[in-house]
Length: 288
Image 1 (cartoon, rainbow, N blue to C red):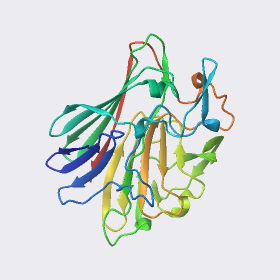
Image 2 (image 1 turned 135 degrees about the vertical axis):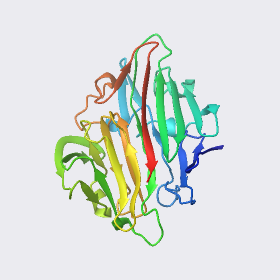
Image 3 (image 1 turned 90 degrees about the vertical axis):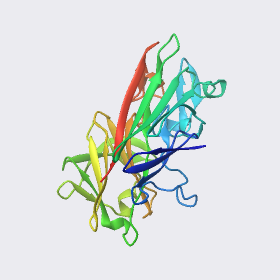
Image 4 (image 1 turned 90 degrees about the horizontal axis):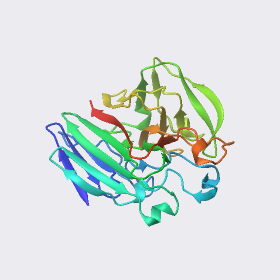
């Protein structure tokens, strides 16, 4: 089922499957979100939970037991329950089941909220530990945006503008981090898009390097701003050779290193949440 939210400036659609935002349109009807073309990339903005990225060999160990969990976890493919709905806000909830516990042995309550204010949508996350033992998790966002957004423009007309001119990307090998960091070449804080940027997989940034990023067109100007202050990791991705969309991804968590121990408690970026506690974070997308 699809839920629509409306402000004076934007209209947003969110699906119950995965609680995934599937459309952001401005007052002129211009679509900013990638529309999940099946032959290119069949998703809009998947939610990453309870892991971000890949586990080494798709496995983790907890309490002496080995579990298998695919890339980015399972929440993106689960039906969420809507528990609040207004004209400009909604709140979704996903709870642990016997099925999820077979691959992720924890009780949890995972809530995702959307709230519109003028040209901005804020996406909030809350994880609650209802059990009597700590739980371990990561979470992340993976929104895909049309690039180009306007007709008669092309992918190479677009660029990302960062707050800093000195960024270091993590080196990846088969989706895992090697531990090496390589400086990213920018031009006055700008990274001009090219399909070749992603020949070696996503651009992954550690150590809270990115608090805000702007997607712009050199032809028609700024398009949107993604603000994610306090998020420790960030990814930029499109499919290799693609010239149609771009994902801007704030994360609380990150893909394994090639030498990861496999123990969930030792996983880099993992969050440990004590019994009865909750974890909250949010980020926003603002249309320019």
